[in-house]
Image (cartoon, rainbow, N blue to C red; front, side, top):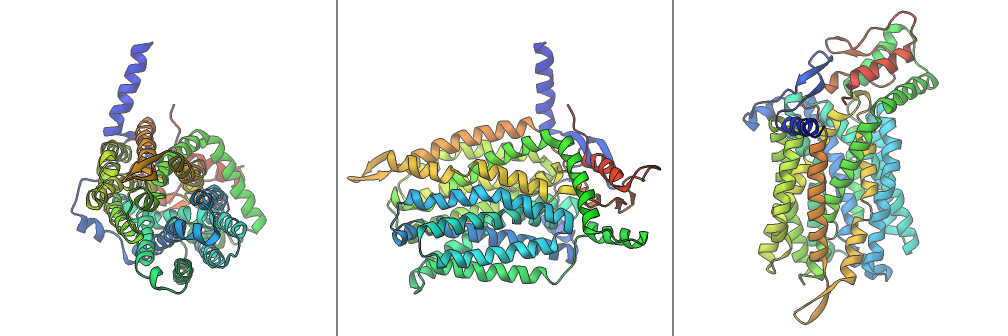
Length: 512
C-alpha cells in the first residue's frame, strides 16, 4: 500500500515541473495531455501579440483593479490619523479593514454572477459607481459607527471588481501572453497602493482636508474608470450569445435567461465543488500572505521601528515597486515554468527573506528587505488571475474566481486585527521605550503562511494554456466557439438541458 502511495506522490510532484491535465485546445475541445507551454520569448514579442482592442479591454480591467487597490489602501495608510480623528485605538480602526474583507464575498457573488449572466460591461460600471459613492461617504462620516458601516458596504462594492476585471482582461488576451498580463493585471493592486502612498506622503500633509483627501481623489479616479468603460462593447462570447438569439429569431426573456443560467450554475457546482473548496483554501492562504505582509506595514515602520510617517510611506512605495516588478516577472515566466511551480518557488524564496524583512534597524536595509519580500509575495500573486481563470468552469469565469478569491479574503479578514492586537500586547523595549512588537508577529505569521501555501498549491492541479475564451457564455444554449460548436444539441433535449451538459463538458473533467 505504501509504495503505491509514494508512487502517486512522486508522479504528482513530477507533474508540478511537467504538468499534464485537461484543457481546452485551439478548437474549444476538451483534451488531455501535456499542458501547452510557451517557450521563453523576448517580452517585446509577447507585448506585440495583443491587438489594439485586446489592449483596450485589458487596460480598463487593469485600471478598475488599480483603483480598487487604491480605495482599499486608503484606510491602512490612514490608521494613525483615523485613530486620532475618532479618538479610538489603532486596533479598533483596523476593525474596518476586517469588515471590508468580510463583506467582499457578498460583492463577489452579486457582481460575479451578474457579470456571467448579463456581460462584463454594465455590472462593472455599476460596481465602480457604487465604490466611488462609498469613498465619498467614508470621508463624510461623523461617527465611528457610521465609519464602520460604510466600510462594510464598501466591502460589497470592492468584492465585485476582481472577478469582472480578471475575466474581461484575460479572456481578451492571446493565450501565449496571458502569463505576462496576469502579472501586470494583479499588480494593479500594488500600483493602487503606490498611488495612495504617494498622495499620502506628498499631498495629504499640505491639504486642508488632511487624510480625507485620499478618499476624495479615490472617488474621482474610480468614476473616471467607469466612464471609460462606457465607450466600448462586450466581450466576444456575450456578443455571440445575442447573435445566436437573433439567428434563431427569438430573444430570451429575462426569466428564461435566468432559468438557463441557474441550470448551468447548479451543474457546475455539482461537478466542481471539490475544485471550489481547493481554490477557496488556496485564496485564503494567498490573502493571509498579502494582508499579513502589507496591511500593518506602515504602522510597523512607525510604531516599532520609530520612523516618521513620511519615511514609512517611502518604504511602502519602494516595497510595492518590488511587488509590481515581481508580479510581472513571475507571471511572465509562469507561461513556461507552469503556474504551480512558479508559485511554490516564490514561496520558498520569500520564506528565506523574512529575517531581512524584520531584523535590521536601519531604514535602508529594512526597505531592501521589504522590496525583496514583496517581490516574492506578489510574484506568487502575479500567477493567480490566470491560474484561477484556467481552473474555472469556462462559462463562470467572473463568478468562480471572484467568489473563491473573496471567500478566501473573508477567511483572512482577521489578519490585520490579529497582527495589531497581538503586537500591541507583546511589546518590546527599544531605546528605553516600550513599543508594540510588530516584527515578531509578522515574521511568525509569514513563516507559517509561506510553508502552508507552497504545500497546498503543490498538492493541486493546473490547466496551463487552456483556451477558455472559446467557451460559450453561461445560459447560451447554442454554444458557438471560434472554430465550430462546442457541442450540438441532441434531438429531444431542451436548450437548457444541453446548456447544462455542455457546461460540464467544456469546463474540464475532474480527475481523481
